[in-house]
Length: 330
Image (cartoon, rainbow, N blue to C red; front, top):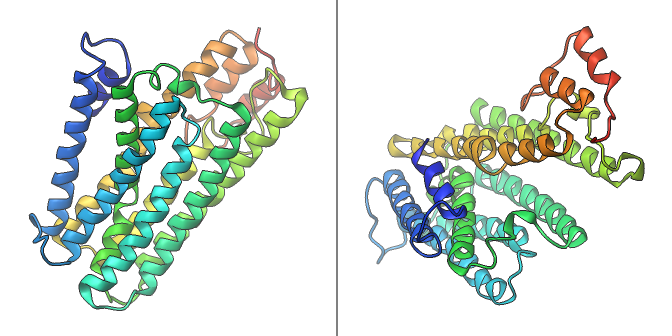
């Protein structure tokens, strides 16, 4: 078991005797060390904070990412609500992106590049769409089951908000790096290739989310699992889209990277780890197995369908799936 997964398990399960205080503290300390290490690697050491430069600008961006989370935690903890958790994440993406643009221009005295504008616009479009989608969903559902036990325990709840700050910082780190260094390098094939990959991933994420929302909204599908559209070819096409778009951001940003800046590869790798090993696929697969496990159609769908990458099936597999495509849970 990896160190990060072990820390998360200890922080958010009851497996530790002093879980209410010690384990969340471990999470915060680990995150602090990770942040210091990454930012120092990108700049080549600790920056001089008395002067605004790309290194110190990244630290300001990190401070904003965590500061917004901790500020939002105060009222959320007082009312024991997770309603604004995802919306706060989107606001943090937006704020950090705009601040990194501003600080990069001020710290380098270079004009904001087309590269920075395009990649920042991609973040803004993505986080605005996702924030609206998630806030609408929780407003309708009125709760997020993941927080039932966490929100009543302040240290664990604070750790959850801190982890969201890390999520923002790590996933968008290539864009923040491009913005604060404000490179004037001309656009090339790598940039355009990265933007095309991002566009593909963003499209897949939107289409799959809309297909699942439409499926769930139809009363005829109550108690059934989705097996149509992109979901016929992948059990989690929305996550594939998200992983793809962040790889696109990294590819485009890499056209300006030098030396320690290549540590930004942590961005897409972190997204893969988070979605495939922590909070995405494992949780949803477990819920589906609990609800539909033993159903012939579901078992056939699971056996024949890729967990992540949309992939064509053989004729026999398609017939087997379609034969039980809309089985309800027993």
